[in-house]
View 1: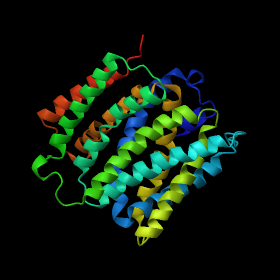
View 2: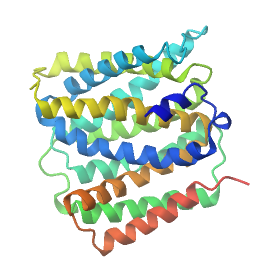
View 3: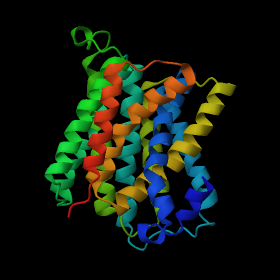
View 4: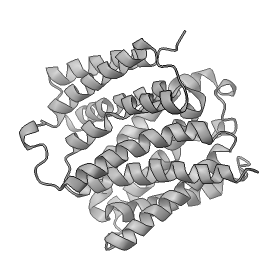
Length: 310
């Protein structure tokens, strides 16, 4: 975390250590993958939007404390603040809120992962439209191969049965899943197009302000806002704030600002396999031949998708 915060002093990739730049994608994938396990760990202690409102408000406080250290200032152009708030509404409010709410409404982890797994392809489409990025044939091929591999891993890990895929929850839960998909894809591209020229820590603080207000309004309107302030909740919240809301988001924004959106998006294919590997290491959950083949396809797909255009 210290190395990451030191690198925030200079956001552009050329000024960062080449070793750290090469390590950033792997660090991001690992931290992001822990979010699924930690969020599940803390979910019984608070409702989705109540939990997220507390998480984002705490992250804002932490960012305020470190802003003077890195001389993060408000930009002269106030429109950048509005752009940052919209990014926060999409990525943190709609995406995380959508995933948390869908799971709370009964959507299985497998189905939610299948929907969110479309993110790299959707981001590539939006990047071609909004950023005029040229996605090569090899990159498109890599994104498709990665998606096939992802679904192979999910099919085995969650024992997905298509005949009962939509049993046990309302159509609104699926709507939340697709809203989350659109939020993370559109928000990431919007960040790259409209949020250049603002200090990254300042931008993320305003993102969390918008997300906190969004989640707080939904919590006030639709939840009891009851929180069980117990040790597991504190531990889960601490990791969610420091590792995910600060560490992982800083890494994601740095990579989006400095690289092609399609190449960054392909990293999200690695998250479910990272979760599966951690479950294998920590909980002795076995990986069968289908999942192993899926991991190979994902690795090859991400490698193709991250090839830089000539």
